[in-house]
Image (tube, rainbow, N blue to C red; front, side, top):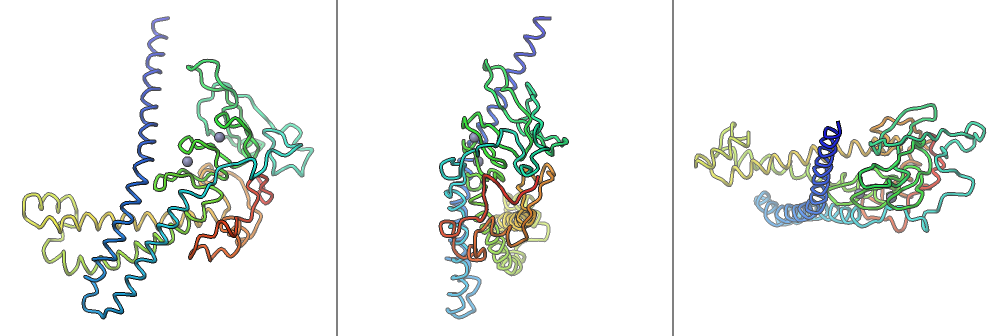
Length: 356
Ligand SMILES: [Zn+2]
Ligand SMILES: [Zn+2]
């Protein structure tokens, strides 16, 4: 019996090492993906504006080429500026700036129900020792419950003790060693608690949250426009300059690459076919993400809350919800980033308009 339990312990230790390896790979991915994206974006934008546009518009006047290039530069600039804003606008929870847990509010008290004081005397805090899933969600009588690491383990092998809190409450963060407001979650990659955390974005290497959701939305919007613009220019190019030298089967890109390697078609054309599929992937990606983000703004939820189908209502109308993401004059953000001038109109700590 003891040897068997020792075997299981060894297995667990191996499993832990494997998981740590994957996590450190994610770190690596997070580091390199943002540089690849920044270089790729400026490279593709630069090549498009410098070479592709004059080539595709050679039968038009210089004026037309100038304005198409201007549009190309504008799209690339909007994407780069908003990418930098996603990356560098600080959306982490700062108690000195955003406020601390108010007096009279208890850890694990659903703050959206504070006005109904009687119901909330014992707002069910359930101890749940050894629960492993950090973000497990239950739907109980008190709404959604979230299992949060609440006590340090005594030894390295043990998991931290976890406690079930109502989702819409102040909870402890063991990593930051302080309480954090509702909807604020700790990101292991950014190593900080992020206000209204939506997700960690590998394209920019930063978390999307309360303060930079606007830049993420604007980035996706111009990304969708730029990829549509590029696709509309690529289609005639494929029709007139690639298709006559290849066959319809070559548009299945592994066939094109294989045939190019054996010298049946030009390698240049095979590369253009691969790039065409990448462009198509980015087009679909930008449009589908933009649709998801529009839905999130419309419901006032985060990806996390949406994923767990939490019953959480933003009581404002659509313009209130837009102001809570973009600040006043929301449409201006699509031209210039205005996060210093018009902060989001909301309270990222007290959430007065949310009923959960
Ligand atoms: Zn934290
Ligand atoms: Zn993050």
